[in-house]
Every structure is written in structure tokens, then in C-alpha cells.
Length: 454
Image 1 (tube, one colour):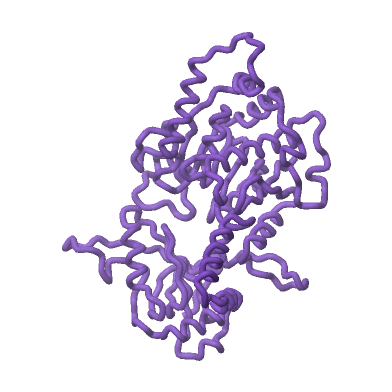
Image 2 (tube, rainbow, N blue to C red):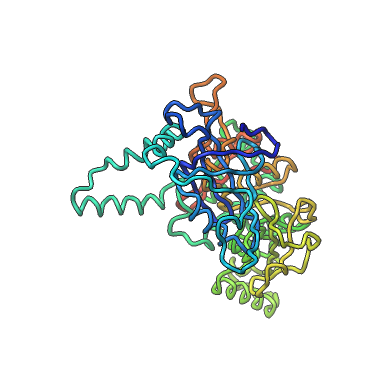
């Protein structure tokens, strides 16, 4: 049965590729395994199924079920909705009456029909058919000469170095806290020169070149008065949104400069900094409360900067989800007490951020450091509402987003699937004429996508 867009339907196919993540699984199916895999039609026989785990209590069981039951070559039946070129399935858990652990029949939306409907050779042929570029790269890596132990060591070291090269990884050896400070300083320079400077750099966004150098070497550091003016601008409304902020290291950097921020992330531990960073924030807050400003001219520039800025503050934390809100979360509990970086909090004590939350409508800017799956939606929201934003993309997730395309380099009407980091950057920049990109001073994925819509 061919799945139709936005209609609930059932598909039966054989798994030839799968990826399992924390809250979802991506499974590639072919629906005509009896035919030769190399002769199948891409559009009619290939489905990418996104299986989402929405039962918070049973996420671990859901992942285990997929790993154990959905083997390569297994024939399965899925019940779901085709949306944006993905067949979306809600994996629902049904509690067992005898209290035993989950077995076949305890999950709805997925049914195992036959094991080993295809062997590994046929699965490999299917991967070569539908993902030819990826399989070619894998084969080329296998051909590398690894006869001697010294050569093995060199290959191992080269892989380690790749983690710190431009466009890969989450920042190499630079800690999350330092990365947060770099992004914060970039945001301050951007807002001041684009929004507040009397001698505004008019050629920054008007330039046809999409790449703009906004480093401190190019623009210089802000003096204390410019810094205070910029901080006051960012503190308007609900302050800065730190989307997909995880533990909150980016919000920590903002908080130390007295900038209001709210970190938003689906994790239960959203905004819960490591102990040493929580201690640093508490110490800064306590120190600012005990100090009084005096007229001592011997103060250094750094201490004057601290005095002219608002005192450090705790940041807020809210939960939001990439897809549907998991069952069991109170939909009426939208806004709550500000979370602080140190308090222990249960899942339902954290406020839930929805599209009608006031924090979204009144924010002054949006920032996101390596937001993974949320990257595209963050840029779309900022563009739609003309909100200043800085996003540092990282992972591409091409199988999770098979509907992302950029124009083909060959020209014409053909489009190319977004499958590399450079493709993702090009795709995001094309969302609005004012969007520019800049490099940040750390290794790994360090390209910042930004706009102030000025």
C-alpha cells in the first residue's frame, strides 16, 4: 500500500538501514524485497520511517525494543502518517498485565512479520542503491593500507585530529563554558554594531558577500558604556532565548554579565550545570551582592566593567520538544518559578515552553550553540518573527530531514539533498536575504549563522 501525504496508512517493508537515537529511531525500508535491489525505483519502493518514542517512562524500553526486534533484513508493518517525505510512527507502550518486561505485542504502531526476509548482502545492495555516495566513501576508507602497526597508529591519530578540524565535532578541546563565552561576546558585538552604534557599520549586511568578519580583531572590544547599552538592550522583555541549550553553559556566560536568559531544551536536566559551574555562578552572585561601588580610581578596567554591568543573575529553564510533547506532561503547567542552576527539580516542576508562551513573544534575541535537530526550526522562527539570532549549527541529520534541498551545482531545476555540513550552512543562509555567517574562535563546528533584520 502506497502511503499518501497527511493520511494515516500502513506500510510493509524490509529494513536495510537503521539509526537509533535517544528519543527516536530512523529506519529505511524497501517495500518490494522480492525484486532485485539494484533495479528498484527510488520513489516508490523506498521509505524513511521516523519512529518517535513519546512515553517518557518507557524511552529506554522503546530503544531496547527497536534494537532487539528491528534487525537488518527483518520484514515489518508500520502504522503512521506520511508527512514531509517521512513516514512518522508514534511508538506507544502498552503495559503488561502480568508485570513482565516488554515483549512482542507490548508496543503499538510496529509489528514484526518475518525475520531475515533479506540477507546482509541484499541489505548492502539496497544501501548502495539508495545511498550511493555514502557507501562509496565507506568502501574508499576500507581500502586504506593498514598492514603495519605504525600505519594503524597514524590512522587512529588522524581520526582524533579530525574531531578538532573545522566543521566537525562540538568544539574540540575547548570547553563548553569557554564556547559559551565566545558566543556571548560575538552576540554583544553583533547587537551593538548592528542595532546601537551611532557610527553603524553599514557595509556589514549590505555586502553581497555572505561571510562577514565580526571578530574583536576586526571591530575591537566594546568599552564599558557600549557594553552596558548592549546589555540593557538584550535585557528587554524576557531577555535572550538559549534554545537547545542543554546544561546551560551559554546562559551561564550571559548570566555572569547580568543578561537575562532562558535555556530551553527537551531534557529533564535542562539548565542543570555541572557542580563546578554552578559553584562559579553562585560565587559571582554572592560576590556582587557583598560589593559596593566606591570612587577608587585604582580599579582596573575589568573591575569597572563588572561594576557598570548589572549584577550576575540566575537563568531560567524551560522544557520543549522537537516533536509532540510526551504523554504524562501536564499541558496546563506552562509557566512556573524561575529555575536556578543549583536546585534539584523533578520533571514536572519545570515549566513547559509552548508556542503560546510569553517568553517567545517578548524575547530580545535567540542564540543556539550546536542545537542539532532543532537548528532549522530555530532559524525559521527567528525569520518569521524578525528576531535577532545567532545559531551555530553542527550535525546535519540528513536521514531525519530528507526534505531539505539546495540547488544543484550543475544548475537547472535539479536539487541536491542536504547531506554535508557545508550543505546545511548553505541551506540555512538561503532562508532570508539578510542572513550572514561568521567564524568563531574555537575548533570544530564554528560557523555562526546570524541576522538582526536591521
